[in-house]
Length: 112
Length: 115
Image (cartoon, rainbow over all chains, first blue to last red; front, top):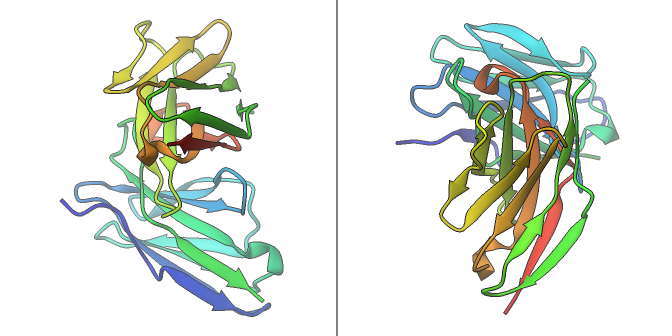
């Protein structure tokens, strides 16, 4: 049973660039959530996708956008990168209306 | 807004001993879910244990158990017979409706296990 997978594992970008991170949910899951984890902090909720639509959004600017595909996989896009966007980006999947979210290994983004 | 507070940035325990990690939360809801996640240096966030607020019985998973005090909004994690592999960051998290709602995390507690 494949768990949540994310790609790439590491990424280095420069300020002003754009980045796309990818996530494949655990088999059978239909809901994908994205979190940003700054160094030494707990994860912060960015947004959640279900049925290819953004269902909830945390306190993140419009530079952060996403997409969910018919196979339930998801992308996180960040435009006009800032130094402060350097973080671990975690994807979590779940089955709608069940209580547990399962996390992928994350993508470490460094913005120089 | 819901908040989760972990007041112990770091804890240490001797191998085979017992340690308790603290967590308090704030919510106006009566039904919700609470979780403990473990994040080792490999970064993968792993579910340790979960508790449904409507259940009075404390959850247990092998060496891991919780002390859920709903009135006090407290949710502590007890690790018995600590093992070297338990060393990690531990995050307490709250969710209003589980899988279809966001998780709100605390700042974490770094657990060191001494041989």
